[in-house]
Length: 337
Ligand code: 13P
Ligand code: SF4
Image (cartoon, rainbow, N blue to C red; front, top):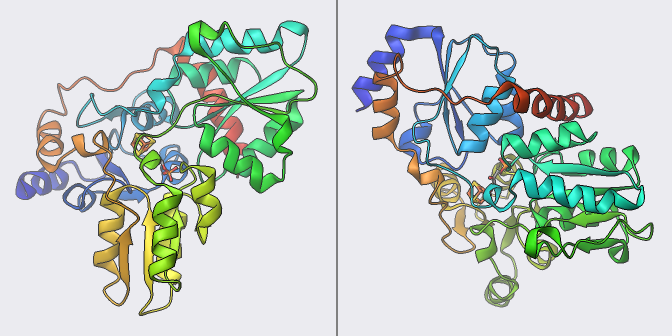
């Protein structure tokens, strides 16, 4: 497997670039030219010269790459079925409908979507003066969005929205978690006393971490350090020693003193790799939580995809969606440059 991948890489040289997200398994990561969090990977796309970009991650990440890549470049994902449970919680027509309901009294609510969303949802944001954020730049982007209108609709991750609002010191009473059952029938027109509306989405992987797990660790080992991803429940984030993107977590573990015990609340493939990388520390998962979609990309299907590169169907985003989605992404890249 390894030999086949190496042979194709040698043959294609700079025409091929393999990107991988930190949640990919080790046997995929070892083939990556670029490894990063969502923000870093999105930033790299524009500078890539490769004709073939292979994205080892979930579908919204490959779509983001396809939106930002030049027309002659082709973006591939080893398993087209690798979706993101959270991204699937926000259908674009419903996002459009909810935004219209919030704005029906004449307010201008700015949509800000977490990058974990479809291209069509990013397009809704682009079309309505909004943008995109990642877990690494959510405070910068929420501050940006609050300046653009009368309030912000943050989607789809309610936890990231609330955790970011806390970092900015927003008043809890001015935040509303929307009830979107029944095609948004319960969504009220925007109220001037509200500043932030949260779409009620979540990550099923990070929802596995609970305050009780942290209390138990603190009782057993008061010196242990605990770092979590901001997709976790705000109570979990509040009890941890720090929270941030996957790159933040990697740095926090690297900077922990030698001999320390560090618990990490994020996807297990990353925690496992950190444990192997830092044998001088005890690195443990807050609990074992695997993203089954990230795990759909394997060394075997990466190899198969590379062998079929000439005929494989690339990830495509229709131009009427790609154009406004690109606008939303470029607003983010400019605001965070
Ligand atoms: P990052 O933004 O930290 O890369 O995380 C993406 C993600 O999907 C986390 O679940
Ligand atoms: Fe989506 Fe959660 Fe998997 Fe990240 S870990 S890709 S948010 S389901």
